[in-house]
Each structure stands twice: as C-alpha cells, then as structure tokens.
Length: 445
Image (cartoon, rainbow, N blue to C red; front, side, top):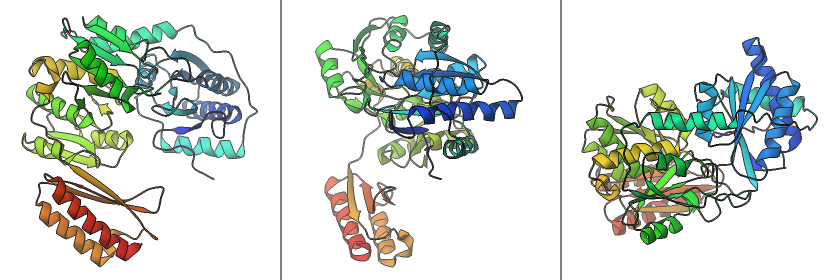
C-alpha cells in the first residue's frame, strides 16, 4: 500500500489520483468515520481553501464524503492555512481541512488535516485513511457547501491576529504586500491597514490560475522592484496559502527566514520571551545564523527539513521560536502553525523597537558564503562506513575550525550525494567541496 500522506499532507495534480473526486470523497467519509468512532458522537469539521480553480470542487467532494458518514461540515471559503488551523480550535471543530498546494503551480492541489490544537493529524489517522482509500473507496460525489459562517470565520481570524499587537503603530510606514494571488489576497492588506500602514498591494487579484505565478515568496524580484519604486519601508511576500513569508528591506535587500529568526530571537530575549535561550531551525539554515546567535548566548538547535520537525522540537524542548530559511516561522506560544501574516506583525513590532528600519534591525547577522555540489553515486552507503569519505570529511571539519559548516547527505529521491559547505571564504569552501566531491566519486560513483 503506497503511502499518500507526506510531511505536509497529500499533494499532487488536481483531478488525478489521489486528488481525484472519488478519492477525496473517500477521505471525507473515512475521516468522519474515524472521528465518530473516537469521539462517540457526531464529528464537526471546517474546511478552507486557497484560490486554485480546483479548490471548490475538491472541497465539495470532501463535504460529500463527510456528510455521507454523518458528520457536520461547513466551509470557511478562501482563507489561509493558519486561518483554518485557528478557526478549528476557536470554533470548537474536531478537525480542520486545508485544501491547498502552498507554493506549487495552480494545477496542483493538496489536502491536510489539523487537530483542534493546531497540530497536523496523527500519523495513525493518516494511515487509516490510506487503508480506506485502497480497500473501501467511496463513489465519487459532490455536495453543496455550507457557506453561512465564512465572514464570521475570516473576521475572527483577523481579530485574533490583531489582538496580540494592540500597541503596534504602523502610521507613516509604507509597506508593499505581495499576496501571490493566493489566500492572503483579501486578508493581508486590510490587516496592515488596521495598524495604520499605507499599503501597496500587488498580486492580489486571483483568477484561479495565477496563484504563485511569477510572484509571492518564490519570486521576489517584482517585490524588490516595487519597494524601490514606492520608496517603501518594507516589503512582504506570502506564498499561496500564506503559512510563510519573506521580506525585502528598505534598501531592496532580501530578508529570509534566517534573518527573521535572528531579529526575533534578539527581540524576544530582550523582553524575557526566550527563557530557553534556544532557537529551533533546520539543517538548511546558514551557519552565519548559528554563529550570530552564539554571540548572544543563544543556542541554534537543528532539525530535519520541514516545519513538522521544527514544531516537534519546539514542543519537546519548550523553546519559544523556530522556523525555516524558507520563511516558515513558528511562535508556539501564539500558534503551532507557521503563519506568514503573524510573522510579519511580530517582525514589524521588533523593527519599530530595534531602530525603525528592517536593515538596522537585522544588523549583526552576516550570511556566510555557500557551495553545493551534487555527486552521482551508484549506492547510498552511510558515509561514516566509507573510510576515505569519513577521513576527508573530518579534514574539512578541521580546516573550517568552527567557523563554517559541512552538511553531507544523500538526496531522498535521486542517487545523488550532496556536499554543502559554508564558510567565510568562497574560494576556500569551493576548494574543500571540490576535493570532498572527488573522494565521493572515487568511492561511490
């Protein structure tokens, strides 16, 4: 039985297995049956989607399946992923279902399930749904959506965001907001205007097919140009479901998730909000962040790539801040879900205190040069079991001498070894990476 749920739910081409109407109907029925059995009562679900043209029929298919198993289910319409997660708990639903493929092109879509706590569904639930998909498929079906509470859900989510920043004053600030023609298009501009900002909104006219198209957090060139054109104080770009955000400072420079973690770690520590003295990030975060935090007596704890793993470590360690270079930032005291709009408000609050400009607030973090080499291999033997590779890796670590980083790993999908080195000098790390790649070729190619 092929595993269908990944670390971020099910994702694929809309209309094709496992995102065809029959399978989505089965998922709705299966989840309702599982929840009814666990709760011993009628389960209640809320669904929300991004702006893809396939979102509505997928949502209707899920509703049909859930209703067929006796569940109550209503729609939050077009809303961000963290918006669905919030509404699930706030309005006492038993599950929240997001229909989105995040930063993927419009013809993809996806489905993920949140518990009322804001955590994603347990793996056991996902495996049980997969079993039903293969062994007890439903007949494809569609149902009318209960849209009676859409405005209530959107307003309660916006009020939730606003409530944590009652003292935030953005008067006099001009902010360019790139909505990626996605789920934040009708939410983010009004949120920042609420705090007095002058908002220049771009890519906020979704048509079902233009989500993420040459815009948003994967394509920052237009945002950088618009910040310069408008002489803006800051630019923020969301992805399609707005669970992450990236920024452009007043100089037109990119401010990624690593820089946001740096700014927020210092801000939280100054306000007694970083009692753990830890920040959780992934193996992809730049070594410059690790060294900058070390200078502030803050430990950087690394996890595997994926916000799921960041959240797991946040909850295990009790840390107050975590995230990814790609812009997923989690403030677990506020939300267990990455939320691009929440991140932007926190960052703007910090900027106001740490000098008034994003470039000044981010001072002290220097990104180290990086080199990445992919090496074709015939087999994926553990590197430590190959003596020559182990010795060459140890030599790289010795030469970096604590002021750089080696990350040696295999691709999860291809027969490739990835050699990534970060350090102060580009020429040095290029040479070190090239030498190590040669050793790997000799031993494993």
